Image (cartoon, rainbow, N blue to C red; front, side, top):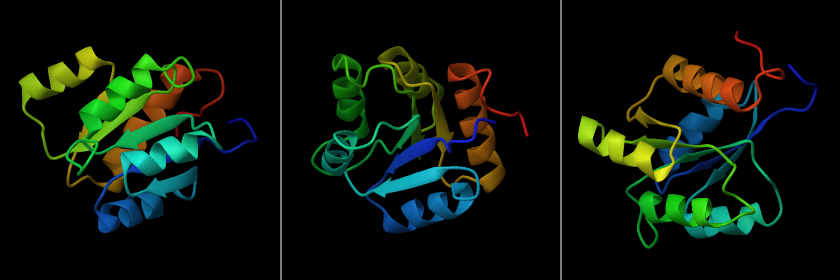
Length: 133
């Protein structure tokens, strides 16, 4: 793995999900927990993440709208997004993929599932730089 830790922005309006996600990922990644899409866009002005974990059901700007904005902006369209959501029916997952999401992680998630999906995504985007541990 390259020396610089990969940066992951995790966006969720539930503080317990942000805390749990940070605990599960902090040993291997630099994690930026953010409580809203507004805070995500503010953070993106300062830090470019390697991956965004994004809740769908949030007040004000939901995850679907956030993804659309990310994919429409040349500065951010290359950043992979994984939805972290309780919406896991096949039709919704397919729609998320069509919008440009890398994949979905269903809530509640385990550390093993979260870490596996993050590693798989980063391997796809940075194949020579991420170990398959």
